[in-house]
Image 1 (cartoon, rainbow, N blue to C red):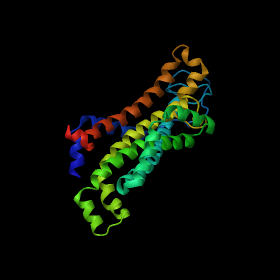
Image 2: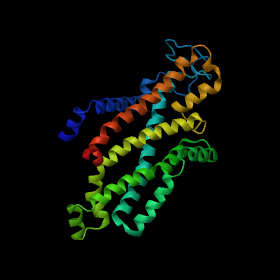
Image 3: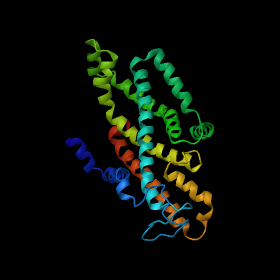
Image 4: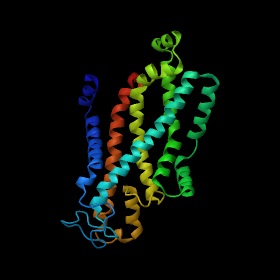
Length: 280
């Protein structure tokens, strides 16, 4: 317990990043109590200016923008958690299998990873999203399907190193099966690397989902920051007067806040958990 606490105290970047993520999680969890209105509730006229009743004004339908800003954090959190879970599940399974079994299985799986890493991910996401139709679940599934190869390569590289260690060789020598070795030895040893990769994937997933929503490929019924930016620009009114200050700017800053917080945590964890960084 002391090691993680000392790591946090010794890294101001990590402290700031964790504080930003804690703020995001708190806002998402407490959204029903923080938001003055429901996210889809019509509470005023179209394009009302900021006031005591509507801190950020209203959109073209008369919904409170401040409430939608708060509720949008939930979509961001769902995407970060769900997409990261899919990416890590596939990446860890493939990486562990390839690194532990070796031989033909390793060769076949790594060639598949090489092929997927060579594909243009963003154009493919846009193409598949356009064919599948706008949906939040579709966006999450696509992110999970296209982002796992990098995680698989990292896990496989670490597994190749760990399987040469004495404790893994001893466990296998005493008759420990692959499941036992993975559960008792490899997964705990890979924990720090997986944690650092989780933060990186979460930030990437949030940015991709916002980009897809901004392009109109997200769920039109969901309240998300990317979709709100797309709606603001689609109305054409955001370029008139100061409307952009209380519609475009807050949602853009919120999205930047979430991605920047995840990036800070990833940057702070990378030197601690990456063996190459340690050797340097």
